Structures are given as structure tokens and as C-alpha cells.
Amino acid sequence: MIIDQLDTPLTGSSLRPTPAGAAYTDAGIFSSEQAEIFEKMWNAVLRVESLASPGQWRTVTVGREEIIVVRTRKAGIKAYLNVCRHRGMRVCTTAEGRSKTLQCGYHAWTYALEGELVAAPNLTSMPDVDRGEYGLKTVHVREWLGYIWVCVTPTPGGSAPGAAASEPSAPPSFEETVMAEVSTRFGEVQSLENYGIEGLRVGETRRYEVAANWKLIIENFMECYHCATIHPELTEVIPEFAEGWASQAKDEIHGASFGAQVQGFTVDGSAGVAALPAIAPEQDRKYYAITVRPQVFINTVPDHVIFHRMYPVSASKTIVECDWLFLPEVVEQNMDVSRSVELFHRVNLQDFEACEQTQPSMSSRAYHDGGALVPSEHHIAEFHQWWADRIGAQLGPSAKPR
Image (cartoon, rainbow, N blue to C red; front, side, top):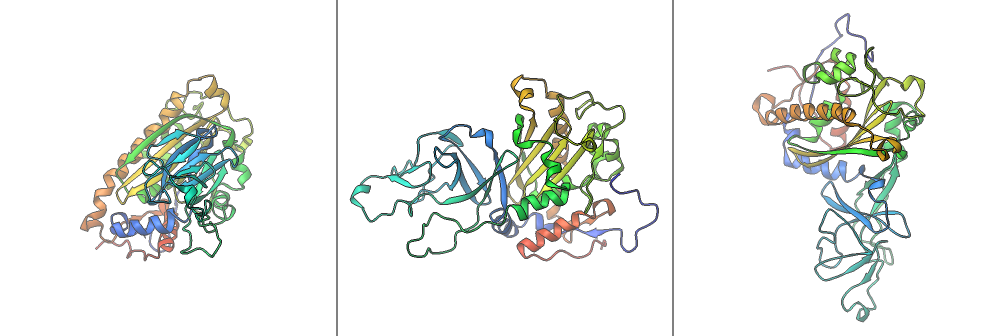
């Protein structure tokens, strides 16, 4: 088990404080989170395979920005703010499509897939217009684990003479943020790469609208103190979770073992599908889970990977998209993965219902000063401190009841 059960009491307080209730309800705090966290960090937004052909595009929202992600003919995957440089109308007004160019429907300003302005009414009579400078505003893109990651780092105010206005400022290092966090939570990146996530295929995707603050969802995912109460199917497959200790305790890397009679990570414990060929022996019959801040959860088991992406909409609403990833032959041969999908779908529904039942209490006077973390949740305090540091907030008072 990741942490032995406590045989003797902890020194000091067993309870540690959470943020105050306003951290989960205040619109100003939520705005700061959008600006200082989601718009300044790398976010996973789409599976690469969802943009298979040149001209395919989809729109996604990161923070307060809507983004066009498109596969170009010359430059691979590119991403742009979905704002026409003329008068600001959305260039793409539907969720997805395929086209040779990107054209605003208001005044027909037209952009190449690679971003530059290529046509507009009377453009030839305006030879002073720099087509690169008036191209779509670029968003940073990175491909990893078979996903498209974007960073909406703000462009500094004002461009130097001759500078391309479409170029964004430098994003945080992908290696020192996303990949470093994977190393911290999963051991060597190679340990995650054993699962070959970039080569897997989507067997199923579920989209959930959760009436809860995004931090409540992360806190829930990071602990298993609740598992015996609300996850009967999960604790049947992984019995140690019933003891309340999660796979993500601070400074620990732990694979939770399947039950002795369990054959696979399925809703009834029966065998799953073909195992991933490159997993290490110590990864067999084990479940690992990591949080990649700010909005990704990765769950790995021997025959598939479950990849969550969160998109906060407001202080009390979050969209969660969840992909179940399998070997290509499993998807291409239409093998039955329903029992694998059903297990974590139920876990998701159970978790999200708990978060939704918690959200209203965040505005109660009973939670004005926050709540408490028990020992098996103490590692969540590091997430709270990270959150506070990112937005320049102060954490709340002690968890002692009034």
C-alpha cells in the first residue's frame, strides 16, 4: 500500500485546512484562475487523430479564449485565436469542419490554414496592409502522448516595428512543466511511455457537464478517502482503495494492485482486451493515476488508458471530457470494450455527483473558513498551495472548528 495505516497518532494536528469556501464560488477568483493558470499553462485539448486530414479544424475553449485548431497542408497542426483581425467576429462559428481556407462570415476576410491573410474585399487596393501582420493570432501548439496541447500565453502589448503581430510570447517550457510533473508523479517519463499512449486509439469518449468548481474535481481525483463510500465497483477491482489511501500521495509513486480474483480493469472484474505490449512487469495488474496540472488526469491499466481533460466554464461549472484509449487493433476490429468503459464511467458519475453535492455548501456560512484534510488527504495541501501561489491568493484559516 502506498502509505501504511497509522498505528500511532500523528504528531501535531491530524487535520489540515482547505481554502475558504469563497475559493470555489467567487467570480473574481475564477477570473484570476482563468488568466493566471489556464491561459498561461499548457492544456491538452484534442486527440491528434481527431484532425487526420489537411483542412480539418475544431474549436476549443481555454480560459476565456476560443481557439481554432487546424491541420494545415504545410505546417502540421496549428492553432489560432478564433477572432477575425478586421472587426473581431468569430472566424469559425461551428464546433468543427473541413475547409481549404478559414473565412470570416461577416466581411469575408479569408485566411490560409497557415494563418496569413490571403483575401478580403478590396484588399488589392490596400497594398500597405501586411498580410502576415494581419493574419490570425497564433497560439502555441505541442503534440505529446497523441494529444494536441496548447498554451494561450498573452502577447505583449504592442509590437516592435516590423514584428509579426500574430506571434505570441514564449510559453512556459513544456519539458519543465508538463513533462516534469509527469516525472514527479509517475517516476521516469519512460514509465508512462511504456503504455504507448501516442499510438493508441480512442475506443470511446464521454463528455460530462459537472455543476462544480474545477478544484473540487481535482481534489476528488487526488484522494481515495471517499472510495469505500461511493465506489463499490472500483473497490471490488482494487480492494486497497477501500482502505482510503489513494495512488497520488505526495512524493510517492504507487501502482494499486488488482484484487486476487480480478482478471481485468472492468466493471465486473472480468478479463479486458489485449494488453499493451511494452508495459513493465511491475506495471502488470496495477492501476496508476496522475494529475497533470492544470486540467489533465491520466489513469493507466495494463490494457488501456483513461485520459481526462477539464475545461472550467464558471466558478460552479466544469466540462470534463474522458477518452478511453486502446490498441489500434482493438478499435479497428470493433472488440467489445463496454465493460472497461463502464467501470470508469461509473466512477466518473459517482465522483461528479459528489462534487455537485459539495458545490452548494461552498457558499454556506458553515464553510466560510473552509474545511479540513485528514491524513490520507494531506497531499492535497500541496495542490492548494500551488493554486494560491499561481493566483497570488492567501490560504484560509486553520481547520479547527469554530
